[in-house]
Length: 286
Figure 1 (cartoon, rainbow, N blue to C red):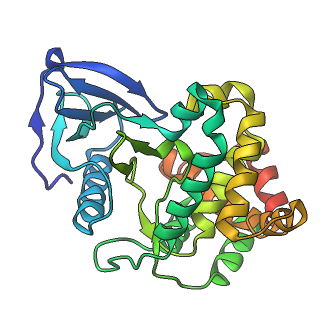
Figure 2 (figure 1 turned 90 degrees about the vertical axis):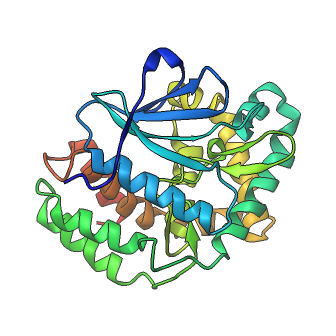
Figure 3 (figure 1 turned 60 degrees about the horizontal axis):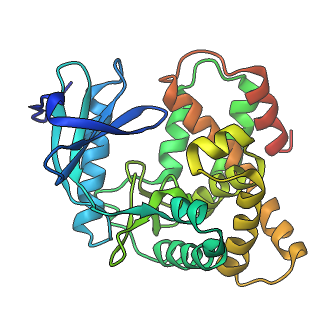
């Protein structure tokens, strides 16, 4: 049930500037705000949850665009945010200036580590562990042996109260030349850093060429180099063998986070594909 006020907008006052898996973004023609509208059929509560999390992150003093208001075009629901003028994501910079790969990968690692050492407001933000648990429990089409193994591993994860981005990757950090800001913080939560690192690792190491170009404007080879540079800076290690050791600890987290993401997209209904189930089994050591 909706409990927050949405303001009607006229899309003739906006122009589309971006497209994601679940939403489209539109810049206002006056150049001060950006509207993000979820695809038709997605519940209004999705926009509300994301907007409230964005407000919490902003009010915690973390660098992120200011959330302005909840909006609707009459069919879709979303929110409007401060538009950062002359912004470029780190991935866009790297695609246009390849020599920036190493310094920006190292800088991104430093910022991620700083974020992961920041205490979260646990009264206003969810625990990632709880979010994943709830999604695994409610996912009707999940094979019971996979559910049992996932919940067993989930129970072994330590309770940690530091910040998580929720969708950590180098495309979700931008700069206007003066400020560096986190964006797409709708899944911001708290918990073990591995919840963030597992998706970053998997995207960087296993993404195909088309998705790498669509999402990051980079090639799979560049993403692999980015991960190696990031891992060495983030963990304070120097060798490929040490990176591989760190990667091994991320596979189970990736399996659990994948179940969370897939379950969320399908609202806990339907049966995951055979490929998804096989991937989860393999990463949970089944």
